[in-house]
Length: 479
Image (cartoon, rainbow, N blue to C red; front, side, top):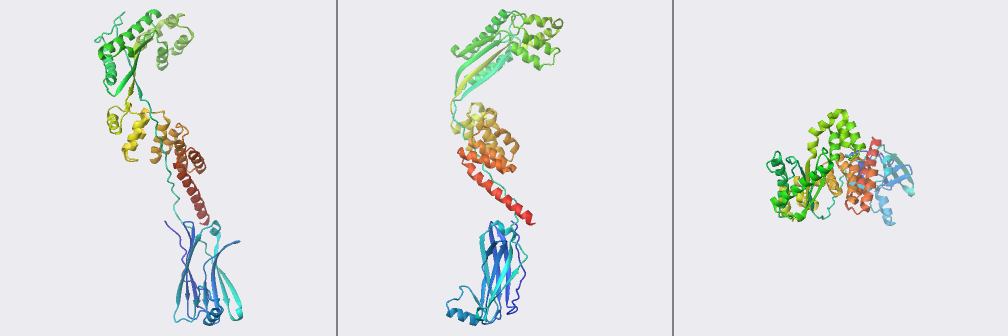
């Protein structure tokens, strides 16, 4: 830290009574760490004053009505010293002249610094006392201020806060859809028919991952069959229901599952799915198609109205390119996963991280080196991936981002992380690092009231930064 030091060359005050007998050398007059440091040397020659005289030299720091008396020095002639000694009035610290050689005396003082000292000047007051206590006072004002410490702006070091996730019941869902092909008028599944081999393989893999995992317990399997709108509603209703039941029987038979786990439903004509497909397409007359679907009830010849639109061209296009996407079976497997200890968690993370709870991932992160690559990866990537809307996950990810200096991204996460003490604290850290001390202080106060321990230290950082800002302004004004 660079500091300005007032260093005077030997500065002698010529005393009218004695000539060049006393040298008063100011070495330091500066502010250091909120203290005023003052130091000087006094050199006294054998002929400083006459034998019957005394001289009191007192440095003073003055600014308007504010005065600070600094340690002085008293020089006594031989006769004056003997007289004062007989009267028991000898000063506790005095210099006697009449010595054989020059004498060096060092004086120093350190007192708390006050703001008025910024504009103060050093004054040296000399009181020369002679015969019959006649005293002559002389004052010298030096044209030097207190030197303020020159330092880099205070760098805040705020503390981020983390939240421990609550223990959860690990209920998981495995979802998918299959576009199975059925011969005309049939609902039984033919494993080798058209696209069925590849579609059934997707279903097999999903069920096998769950049913073959000894760590999980299947709670339920939901299957829903869908049909496209062409043909009669009654026919489509029977067909979608039969195809959903066919998939259930296929899974029960292949994986030897209890049929009581299944719940089967169907949607006879998937008009909602058709609306979404039309909206996302670039087909002509899409607005007229959507208007007809929305304004004509299903059983009031909606399909016939579509078939008449523009000679049936839009309907034929939908029949060819959109309706096949509606003929599908959707499934969802609900299951619970057992809890893992720390040694098991790392292995599961490599194979199937979706089966880990938020708390298990958090515990694994904090078992590694703080701010290391594993710690950062889990809190910033893994947990947000599987718990994207979780307030605790966002709060902790923001803490990692703040440690890395990514304020903008952290701020976005914290805006959707709730009002916990940790979240308020971390948002306060954002504002502190941005330089908004008022907002930071307000957030830290709220976080502290919510029980966030890190906020107390962060409030100290706010106060330290505010004080430093004032010092920087003072220094700029002096410059």
